[in-house]
Length: 180
Image 1 (cartoon, rainbow, N blue to C red):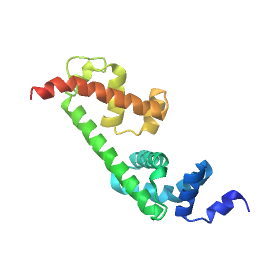
Image 2 (image 1 turned 90 degrees about the horizontal axis):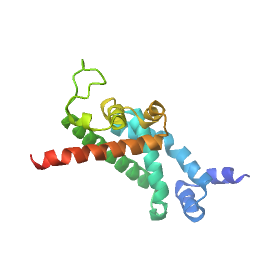
Image 3 (image 1 turned 45 degrees about the horizontal axis):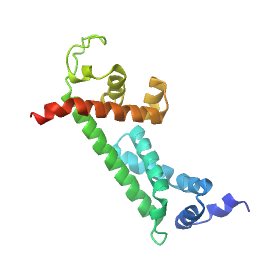
Image 4 (image 1 turned 180 degrees about the vertical axis):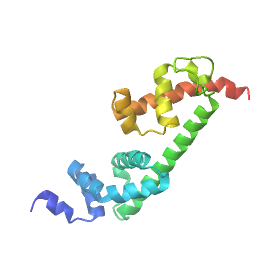
């Protein structure tokens, strides 16, 4: 019997215990396989968007990896997993809501204006790459898996560009928010 076949018969809790002691990626892959579809369905119900749900699910598994040492094997793995997934989804919703508020505060250019028209507005104060990534992510609600090829970069780079653009927009808005 191969190691994978042997591990396939283990409970989720036993798999997590084994992962904690060995950090064997193949063991963790089994947990991902077991929980991917159900986790995707749960995240989609919360977020109501399959692209965003996929992002949240990937983030939840990354959190699991980073917090593996915190898991108590005496507790059901499924409960721990779904708490992390739910919190990841809620965090993502909060970040998206905050980002939308930032963009909504920025004056939008009229539809008739050409793309080269840089007259006024907070968005116009941002460099073009920052404006582009914010429009793709927040205005068009595009997932990072689609933003990345559009910008010619990796998904992680697209995420980082979005974070940097939001930080720049916050810095521009900060003085105006203090005067309100």
